[in-house]
Length: 164
Image (cartoon, rainbow, N blue to C red; front, side, top):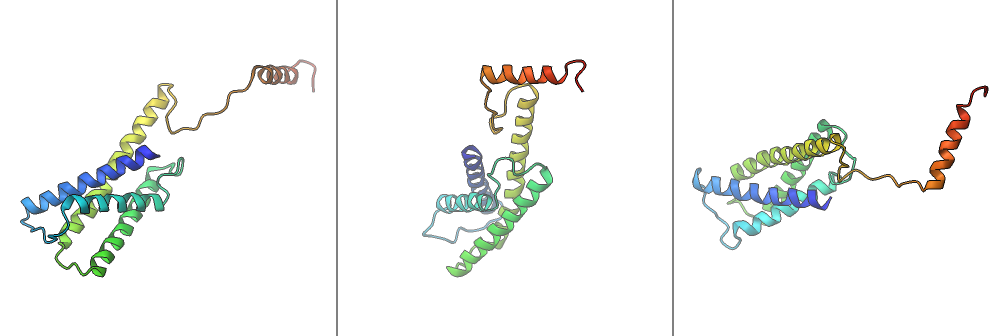
């Protein structure tokens, strides 16, 4: 769980910085927040992204059995982050933030998150297919030897001939 949270947080920070640099270099957007540097805002954004995923239960083990369910929850997290971001921009009266930047950020982030999650899902399925236990799968406790002998004896007596 902590690994997934760290991966999502670092991915959100990298996406924020890449979209910011793309917006500044290619689109000619000017960084209007003189008191806050992009890295600080990127860390705040990544914490918000991880908090939204956590709030919607995306870090619970065995929550998402299908890719479709995971995609819908990531999209719900995106909408939650959009609402929180726009609310913060409104509350602090920051009209200089490019809405194009926010839109690009919230289009790229769910795609990156789902790509990482699909990669991890395939990796874990491959590990499970080769006989290695997946790190996220809970292990079953081993039975002691007397319990194994007792259950084997019970199975033999049920399948004994002449027993109805």
